[in-house]
Length: 225
Image (cartoon, rainbow, N blue to C red; front, top):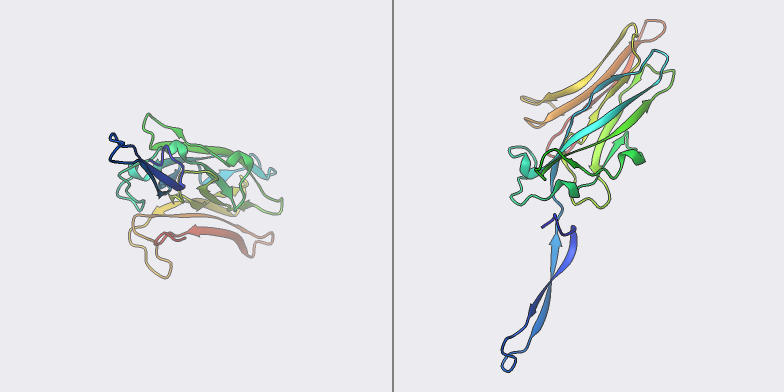
């Protein structure tokens, strides 16, 4: 039903028209009807680590691409298994970098991968920039439903870090990616079977005496980050 009726509060109207108008009169009754939003899962399909084109270039352009699946298409995950799936093309998403979305990365409508209306893809081209005093950055990428989306907050790769760096740097380590939790423990333990994303870059200062850099690790537990 969510595929043809927008989410929100509606009225369902029942109209009774009698065949025998002598003994019965007609009537109309309205009852409230609430259409809730569908659930979906997003999976990042792009790069986690990027390098600029040269050591003197402080920007890198890359596609941010995702597969979007109706929860009905991804059973046995943390997504709610929905026996009545909607049409993923009714979703609208925005991709934010450190909390900011550009017009090119907003109001993204999934394109179908096959004839299956439960699975689609979204994406946009984004240019990452940093200052000449930095050797790299680790921005956080966030995916969330945009205005007029028939889908609520998604599960999956909704928040994760990337690593953007200068190439051919000496005394530099960098990386990024994900781990699938199997025996996570401690104060910030993640749920089993869920991804923990990370990105980092570390470099010695000019004097070669101190390591400087940053790391971004996203742990997911009970629907929280």
